[in-house]
Length: 296
Image 1 (spheres, one colour):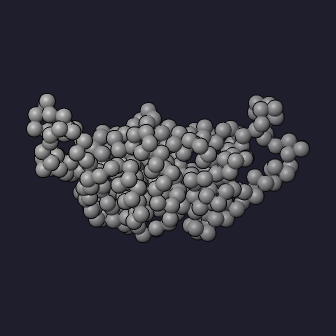
Image 2 (tube, one colour):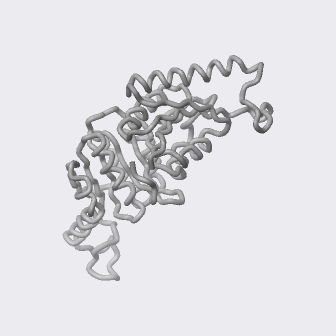
Image 3 (cartoon, helix red, strand yellow):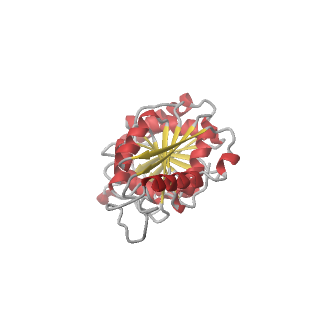
């Protein structure tokens, strides 16, 4: 998809950091940057359908939002001189506005924390909701910036993760960085047992199990190393707890890329508490790519 990079703006420090990241991503992709501020009207003051969101009594509010977008644009041009910027104020709930914007975007970018007023973007489960339902990849900017850090790809071998694998390769190529393909396994993985009646907690062939997990990792990368010959790929097979191992690995990464199913809910590695742990505790930005999405 050649649509713009869309970034949610609410004036918080986190959203301004996201604007700078989004501006650089737009330049690398050769597309424009769209700054979006979602304005949620109190129920008693919703303007008539089709009316402008401004009223004579709301002049101060208009100046506040204009100032927020002006500062965001300044940050964008400082981070990526020459980036084409457009600004938009949309009436509606932030998560629904950004979900709608994602339908024509190549990438949606948000900060990890928002404000509690005027278009707060990431309070409660908003990041998770957007990551699960957006029509394009979602980049949640959090953790410590490492522009030259490798792209860390969480590999689970599921069909839903194929889009994430290609997105990770493309990101590493765009940023001229290495890629770490990480597959986490443990002895409860239900593969390669001695027999169909052997439960994983009673008996297993660890060598065979490790070989099977290595095959999963290799097959997940199939065909893309040839498509992206400029990307140096480091395969990493780790035995351990998924949540702990994945978060720990982000301490050296510039970006974590994970896959998600097309109808919400994270696939494979990212089920339930693991998805929340990654989005809230990763030490680097997190990109969530739903199955079937366009690649950059």
